[in-house]
Image: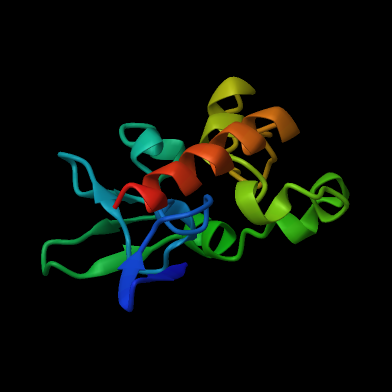
Length: 133
């Protein structure tokens, strides 16, 4: 999101879609065994790995890669009907996986991270930061 103030353009991260590596096409995390992950919370959980870096320094994706990059909160009716969707984007998929103690490697779950009250507090603090710049 770009905010214009006094003719300066300030970039401001807002909502989950901006900072979350899971939702970014070009962000990855690599562990000591050259396994590749889409989220820092998934590191050292091989069942969530999206592929490996081979001996030729090539990325070799697995089926989890395609499952994870096509993840969308619009796949969940709970999310489609939620007015907080633009901020939360379906919540943290990795956190949902970890909290469910699942071992299937599927990150296509929801994990609600915010409420209307927390959103109001977040927005008020966001505006305060913008006004103090």
